[in-house]
Image (cartoon, rainbow, N blue to C red; front, side, top):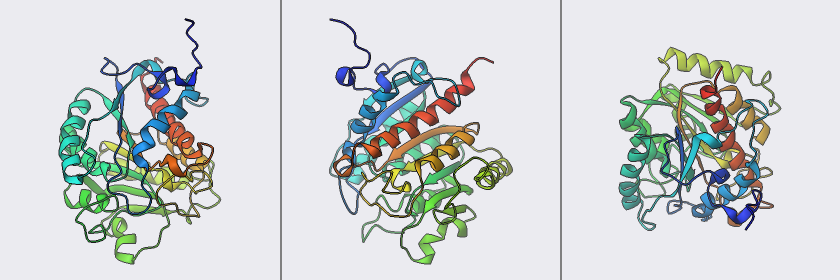
Amino acid sequence: MSDHAFAFLSAHTFMKVPAGPQPRPFGLAGIAWDGAVTNRPGARFGPRAIRQASHMLCDGIHPLFDVSPDALLCDHGDLALPNTSLERMRAALEPQAAALLARQHMVWLGGDHSITLSLLRAQRRQHGRPLGVLHFDAHCDTWEDHFGEPSGHGTWVYEAIQEGLVDPQAFAQIGIRSAGHRAARDYVCDQGGLIWTARDLRGRESAAQLAEVIDTLKARWAARGQPPLYLSFDIDALDPAFAPGTGTPEPGGLTTAQALTLLEELAGENWVGMDCVEVAPPYDHADLSSNAAATLVWTYLCGQAAKKAPE
């Protein structure tokens, strides 16, 4: 049988890269969990949809970085996790994440945003110091409880700061716009971090227009001693016109171009990992959300691969 490289169903890994484990610098794994959502479930199907969308990137030479990450990346598939208890899921996720982080620079496909707390716990142990975080989201995720429950997909930022997993002064949020009381909405700023709301960024898409954001982030991270940086991208940071397939859509969000510009311009910073969460295919249209997610992940990986390219 011929090997048809563009056959969409011929592979089930991201960009059709080899299944892990492989001796490659970058790894990817899915976390198919949505047991902590508060509105529409379905993010457990996100990893599968993002991988499927990534098959359009199978000849993926990035037009800015002029590299492809496929020779540097393997896909570990979806992690085996309980699907009915947040506490049990985290107890199973954290040792698996730690084992992968000990070997590779990892990218994670969610899943709902509750997974990020466990990933930051594993990263904090791996690097031995608090992390800087760039958090794209429509929601601040700084609630002290989750509608009466102690933890969920809207509490992870508060918990990460309280646990000392992150450096609050190296924490920045982009795209925030949902309703919320002031104490939660401004929590990151109150702790010493930065917030650019979606309203702050309206009409600013190019590198020149976003230079204030880019330069401020770089200067802030440099002033904090260049901490290891983690990128957490909730797909609902994008306006529903660009990513309708998510559990809690919020009108008035970022464009895909804005998000890609920021990822491209910040690629040279000290990144140690990324997650892309809250893609819910049951509510998607024309695969807009999964295509956006795959391109965001691919852009991040290309930026990191460019650092390893020969001069």
